[in-house]
Length: 192
Ligand SMILES: [Mg+2]
Image 1 (cartoon, rainbow, N blue to C red):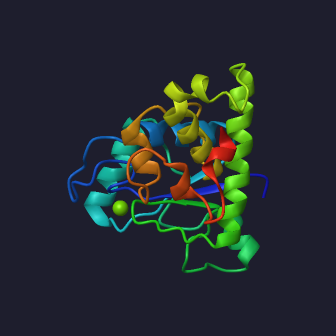
Image 2: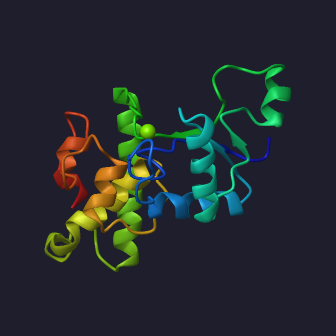
């Protein structure tokens, strides 16, 4: 398959959780999904809603500009690939307010490596040296947030919004202190 499949939950994810009603739209996520679909990826709605409230969710999503390629079922390409209908909907990405990602120490170290690369590129673009502590100070939250987001595989041009970061990285408490994201022996000062 030359596209990625994104399975996305509804309540608490595409919109604020007001089940069985529909809460405020998650505009950042909706924009992200539209972008991915425009690039050729497929969207599957993956929700516990059934019957009338499912129809409402699909209609509401259409109003937000999102038309799903499948609703609570596998794409035809997946059926063919798997040789049958799996009970778990297959996706390359699952976006759900109940997600929990377990990271091993090795995963954490890899993410950190990616985060450091992004931070260094960003500093270079801003014409700052990585050891220019004074210049970085005002922007430390933003560059760490952006680097962390990239390390987590989150597509985001700039992350300046605390609420957005909380939403995307719910295991973190507030701004991203380097020490919280790193394996024990890493010294945050290496970044600056
Ligand atoms: Mg949910």
